[in-house]
Length: 431
Image: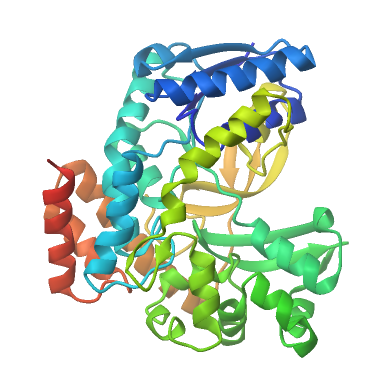
């Protein structure tokens, strides 16, 4: 019987992952729920227990607030942690804004992504070290952002077999489905790059590559509302320039370019970008009040599940697909795995985690090589180098490397601003 631990079980991922256990046929498993927040853990446990009993499945559930106990004899650990709560969120959102940065989400790239990596990395490395010591053959499946530097740092520091997972590849699927009016379930994208900054080399439907049809419809004035709603106005510009489209919508893609400072002022694009953020009060340069109340919304959601007012749905994540393929000795193709590069994408650092399609089976997990145009490789290499420096800086506790990484980021206003951001982060967070 396979044992799966969810570390950070009080996150919004857990109920969808429970649905995935049923979706892939792993109901007869051991599920370990671990969270340092005992109140959230109890709420999740009650919801999971009620669903398992209602469906009469043999999923055995244990809960822990102690990491070492939770990591004993597990086969897979899924990390969905969010370190530091509202204090962390305000730090990586508001501190860059205070020092002149423009960003939308701030959890992946830009100064916000660097700060979030600094906040999350110590806990993530501790989880990996504990997993290595307690269950040395286990696999770590990470959902926590920023995906690239965290997975890279974990691999460098612990050598634990780590896979990063993200459903961002579905953005291009959904856009293609709406623009071409075709079934999204039958669309197969081929995309590669780094997490939240991948580029789509193929969109296959009935064995035909639909990239040119997608480009045509992106320039169809009758489809402009679909493009705005996605939103993909910046993606449309980049597709025209680089001849292949970014995979994710503008909310994530735009943060990897210094042009965000121009796009945010554009009378058409700017308001759409600001609305897509979901985190930032741009007028007051602060965290949106609604972002601070999401914990209350989560408890309401869990209570509705416990009371039988809401049903769980499977997630769009691939963690349980990986576990199922390995445990059942099946071969599965997945459109997005975050793995150490090791030559999968040329001209990028070997040790950095990249995102690429992959094959999972009982005996192996490996990515598929994808060739990308030179201009795209140049863009990716800047950020991959930044993340590699950041990961090393985190492991070695080297402020110089961290500051160098921050200065490589296109959203950092200046070296002086970078220095001030790091110094103020230390004063705020290390108390």
